[in-house]
Image 1 (cartoon, rainbow over the protein chains, first blue to last red):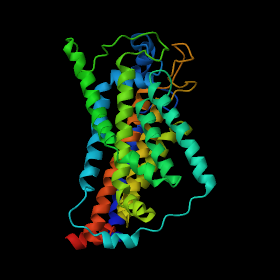
Image 2 (cartoon, one colour):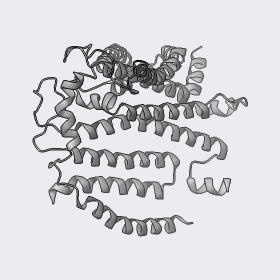
Image 3 (cartoon, rainbow over the protein chains, first blue to last red):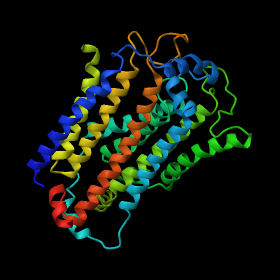
Image 4 (tube, helix red, strand yellow):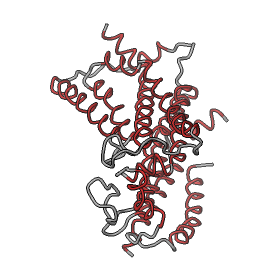
Length: 251
Length: 115
């Protein structure tokens, strides 16, 4: 099929899709006129029932915790897929690749010092975001991504050795697997007490405290560990060859 | 009419993403188009959950009962933002492998080579 034929077919399909869109949007309330009873109910009860002031995370890690567990395993499976595809192969086309890797760009002092100063702040910020998910906007997903960005900042500062040391650490894989498994284990622990899977069985504590909201805070941190580990494993897989080249170049 | 603008934006973004996937000449470009297509769901979800006068559903410094926007749709898209990034990474790793095996990232040529 030529690209012109394909575009024509696409336009015909869109012509059919347009009325479907219009039909689907027809009965939606005008924007700003929200009518969903579920969202209303959950905002009314979440703070009292779960002692969590961030209702979004109360939904994510408690009311719809099972849903998020599924999402977590999508994340886990994708990363597993990347690892599988990028596994070191026996046949070495190193000679071919060597020509493709460009020489490292010189890093200016401003960039190097700036990035190094930023890395420490980002670690603190990432930990803060991951730990306070039950209180304020944030949580494991966001904190994990911020933490996983730190090695990239180190990489930008020209310190390839430290970057390699961080991302090749076996702890990253442990974090990735332990985070995913930990979520399921926390859910299963509730069943030991006779409750349903992922029941919030820990003491809820004082609303507004760091150690409050029971399993919501714990699961949030677990997710943070998994996301951090997962993204570090991803970076390692993608940059492995370039890192090896650059480390060889430095020696 | 303005009240439905957000829905129109969602459809608009969705269709351009789809158009990009259909006409793409490069697998990397195609993955990015898929990511763009997916963002249309964020626009749609947030538009559905929005409430005039509503604030963020965080009761750290506001009393319970204050009108807020729907936290459910936010929770749905929040997890997806991170998961989508890893799915894109998986797709891109497939592109790298396709390039290694077939020596091209043009879907058209890929079809001919592997046909």
